Image (cartoon, rainbow, N blue to C red; front, top):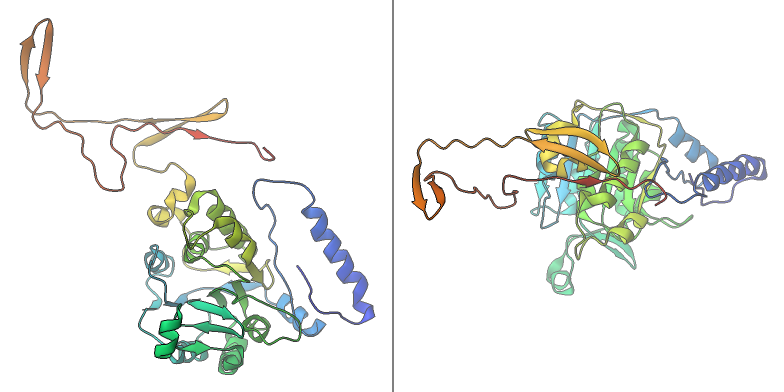
Length: 340
């Protein structure tokens, strides 16, 4: 938790102790996040305390707007997690559509907006190049969120505002976060974003988790192979950028409970969950697996050549599908101790 605004003297002791507690938890090196860390911000202690009064985030419906060129299976994941209660608008929408949806959300809402962002002045845009801007791109500024605020006050949504600089916050400066954080739990990047991080978060939303645990697990998942480095996903920069605003101890309530249902979309959660693979245990610094491969050869002929008998099995061949492993396969997983 982090506080960005000076407060009256009577609050100083409690806040200093809080900051020291966070600092001590980060004073040793680890290879992954082990704590749920969030920021409480506001123009007064009352606004920050309001964020601590929420104890649950119920998610039964999702509204998803995206301008990204790749979906990374996010539609499929949401559809499974929320039993099909998803409204998606990809590519063909403007900010009037977004504002209308945000102003009319109901309880138990996950609201995702993936678009482009600019910093001077702070704004969200539907374009990412000067030519599109010249032709008439669409823009959304923090002051345009006035109509969102009443709806958010009543419904306490989880908002993933995935655009560069969307999570930027300074005291006394109008921003998307300062407009909405009193009445919503927000995850947003302060600088760099990645559409793959949205997938990492969705892969780790689970019933009865806290939102802090989901955010922590999403960061570890993203870093440890949940997505690949690419021109829009410099993993180190991305993970320094994303911030959770709100109380991390809120418990998630949602219909989705089985991680295995979305494993095919989430890199198997870095576990070997392929069919027919048996985990044999840990041996030294590696894991042992066994996979039984059965091939049916209904017809064959034997040919003699010198001292060898050659089996000509007509239907026997290696079956290769794009993106899949050629069978038979051998899998080895090496575990590195923490602090390595």
